[in-house]
Length: 91
Image (cartoon, rainbow, N blue to C red; front, side):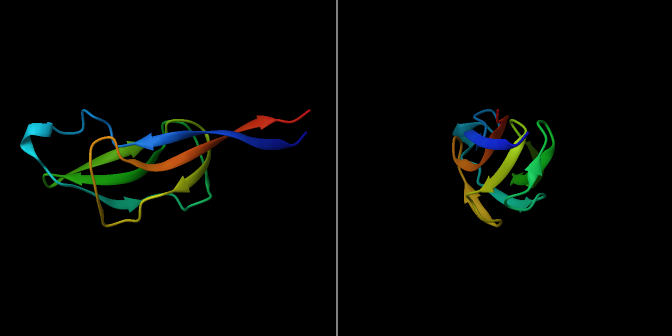
């Protein structure tokens, strides 16, 4: 049995990460998993720094990681920083 990539789930900076009226800057400080690697749902895959606090980003699904935003980049609420491509069993 083989697997095929089917659809992707976006990795989005969550709206509740910080209060919008505070106008805090957030930086994607590190990816903890390499681009193209397999990830498991809820695994910690990246770190974001907000107001000198490090926040962990979890994989929203299991599959193959595609990184869209480089480390040390500033991010805003709702930004898509990556995708997880889901895999399905092929017949």
